[in-house]
Length: 524
Image (cartoon, rainbow, N blue to C red; front, top):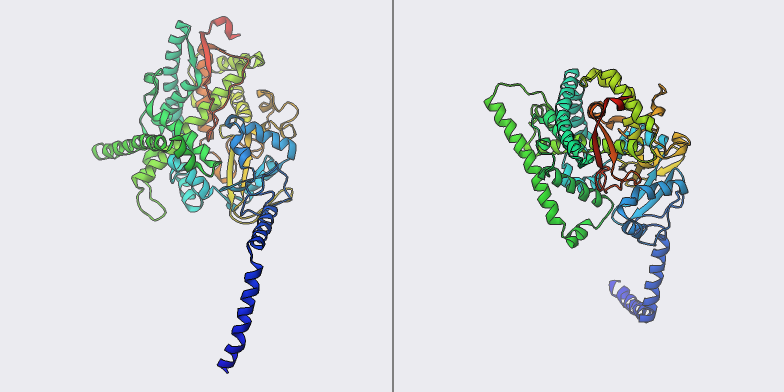
């Protein structure tokens, strides 16, 4: 039986092989390959290879297989936020882009959608591995890149210290102490008639303040305000490098080609070495002294991780770096943009006048306190209005971990990314009214605060910024003391400062100002 089957099968198989061989000539093979290539191009005509095409969400034109890669590569990095705003004006509340190595990004600029993603269906969206890999040199395993339970326990611990009233009073004293050094420095510059970079000065103020509060050690930036602080410079370069990696899938190749990998490694070493030194000093102090430290550093040193083990030095290092990013950059940049908005050519001069009048009325020539800052509602409005137009984190992104539907019926599939633009939302007239693009602190004085979904500068939902009050008190303290003593004039009041591509929103070339001593006549 087996022999008979073999006899009949082999000739048939041989004949079939001859037919196939004749069919698969070079010409026919080329046609088959060509047909397959055309099929692939058609399949991914509005996407990147491996990412299914979607026609239910509008967006900029795509190159088949490459998506929006070339648009991303050719767009100037200081125009990203403006381009996002333009796309929302053109395509509406949501539009999609695809990038090789990143996948599909659904961009949204709508309070209901943002509220759904960040609060209502919070656990369906995570920072994800792409973001953690890109930000690893700066945030490591810290709270900014963490998800799930690892994020939850870090958040719970940090929330303890920010909710203690005694801590708030202590921070207020530190802010005043550091602000005095700023006043002393500006007094000298005012006497000299020199130009000062106000953004750089705000950086030094917030970094020294946060260092003192978080781990009992000032960076000493304000002791020599005119000199560069190696840690701060390295931190800024890392911030920029990590931000660039988020939207560039081949960043390893690019950084190698530019020779930037070595610089990133050097900057990472500088930043981490400083953090480890702080940790080692505290461990030594704890052994040699009976003093009970109650700062952020000690809180984490006294706690345990998810497995009941003390935190390693590496985890403590990541914690420090994450909170320095939050405690230094965001407030300093918001203050810089606020001073620009108040002093630019088209600024309403009544804004500065009202701020000075409130400061003089409440402080009566004295220094700010925790209680006085809570009374300065107009100062708070000036600060929040600046954050509305120039949010310290102007754009953000998350990865969907389970299929979802956004308000408006927009479907989001697992592994797709959703990005939102606080910058675009702050300029949207459908959200803020016809004067959305104007700097108008009065909009905050009506007694009705906008919802967090509308004003996303301090995030929303379970990840709402723990340091919101911390930052506001810090900002009001320094701005009040500056208004008591000086007047400011922008070197170029007609030019809007360019921003530097980063995780946050720094001015690319600082904020050069001329400082003058305030005369009593200018108080009115």
